[in-house]
Image 1: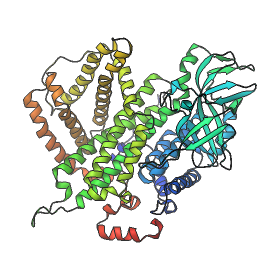
Image 2: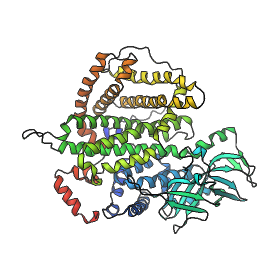
Image 3: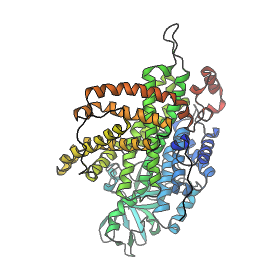
Image 4: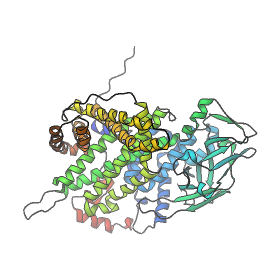
Length: 589
């Protein structure tokens, strides 16, 4: 029997990174091209156009769009490095690579997709997906845009103003390939639910296609996007442009027949399958932005001298409110990075229509993205006035976080849905008997995390048994608490698997103790910690933070970032000279 060769231990950088170092370095070089620097003189409209120009350059440099869209480690890397080095690109790569190219590559046959994928592949058209509407928001199973049969193809219509597509980035007049969601009413008058159709939203000269009206929305202060409202009036779509995923057929009379009952059940999940990939890609890039913000803030804090008295001049990193906040955020971000990497690895071979897959990504989005925003915000504030400037990057990361968190409406909605599903799935798994645990013991820490998860599962069942809207609303706080508790337990387990690295062991200790400290009252009231143990947690956490601080240089080095590429003035040893050089650089004007 063949025995696979044993792999050697992986480095700290490999624990944190997901994917190819060579591709990461290639992306850093592409996305640092000074030709696409954002300048002081650029209006918002010019910044939008600059982002499109940079997208075309990215496509030209990395090769086939389809290959990137279907190679998840490389797709995630494109998101990650765009978030760190070229934040204006994030809205465009999401539509182009993931939602449009990904859907066309996976939900129809190659011959039908070929005309659209060819234009997306070389960037001659920019991809986008049109789902959300005024009326339904992100509850897209309730969308009202209509597709109907028209002899040899489809026509797409917007029945009322509330059914217009709201938010897609299509304002800039460039050639567009779109994947549009519409409710198909077949020729027999049967509402067959939400389906996807490929269409050319704008022609080669950027003019809207016949039957398409595009109205650009207002200025956005946090992120550069050409968001628009789109209405359809008999937009014609080829029969071959229906992205059926081979779940149904439509005869020459326009009547739809499902392959089987399972195909009907899988239809909606199939249509939104690339949203699952996109949710994880955006979560990954927010983790990347949080790591970059921590790298910048912590390295600045180590250099920034704070004169407290004529003789006392500690660095900012020595101030407890700076050190403790940023190191706790560092532990939380690395826990979510390693947890997120495990979800990303599983997604590569997963069925994207599976409930378990969809829920696992919903949980990751809720757990990762909200923490990333908190981390980036803390870094921005701890950096003081330096944190306000785009030159130091961190303030721009806040906009990326807001855009990702609210891109499908409120992120908490996905968390509550996933928590509700979890509560049903884990029902019957009883929590352990109440008993006092030692918060400093790694085994007891794992037990405490698990006990919180299963106790919330048990407490949630009363709301699941309440029928109707009352129960669905009442369960939301418990479902959110369960989503957080379950994900935290998964993250701690992920850290535990890599705790042979002393740096990760230090991260694990801060992560576990800060979680227990955060929920100390809960554990106390449930008889799992006593007052002495609650008091001891804070002492253990202070020592754990000291231990993590000793490993800080190695952890920051493992992030794969460097001062030259980030080019943030606060990373310079001579801050005044760095700002003087930047202000004098003609490329920035």
